[in-house]
Length: 312
Image 1: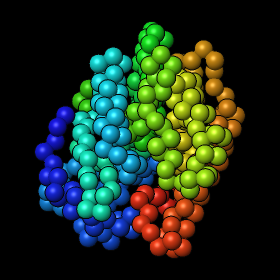
Image 2: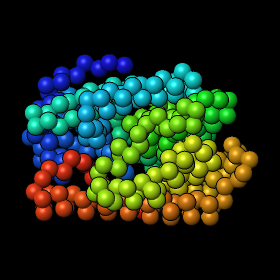
Image 3: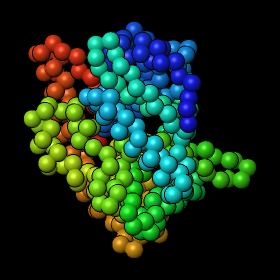
């Protein structure tokens, strides 16, 4: 979907952005979600206020942007048409700055935070039936990915099903839950076994030498997990520790096991999350170190928005 975005307004925001303190930018930005890789924010501009933006300063050329945008659109098309996932309307725009930088913005409608899955689940965590209905709905959506991958010979879809990646729309009269998927910024899919996305683009926010080490040690492991249905469910459940709703984990495991032949145990979730927390804590430490060296020692601009201390 094409949104009517004033490119000059977005360029003005980018030119005046303070990546360390976005709220102090020439045009302030309010962070509404910071993932391990990139952040989502609202821009305090009349021309841009209806939208949520995800900023990707990872491209070295216009050709890289064009390739990424092609892959992004194809991924969304596969999810919608072939898998049957409802994806939030998504657009993108490339900004070329006056100092030669290239930044790509993913643009989506701004939804109330109360509808984002990790916020919504906290509001219903004491209501067992609502939690059960939500988890059944999410796991059913994830099973669509599994079913597609089993049937498709040439194309396999990777998917991050974390609860924070869903918009939850409830119908109180019919008690139905409608889910919209948010996180398409890392469009993972393989054609004939080849990863279409150059995923190491997302490692640019760590020092170049360490980049190679991280890629060698962890990148393939991280990518593979998003193609494994059982690990997608374990990842979703394990992040209940981080979202501080760990009391829901036993119930979530019981519901997830209705969708699996190889059942999940609590220890599976715990050990997976321990490993996951180690990988992402190391990644964020390396990114913060890179930012310190670049801004404090080299006195250069650091391009990436980093999350603060994440409880794990």
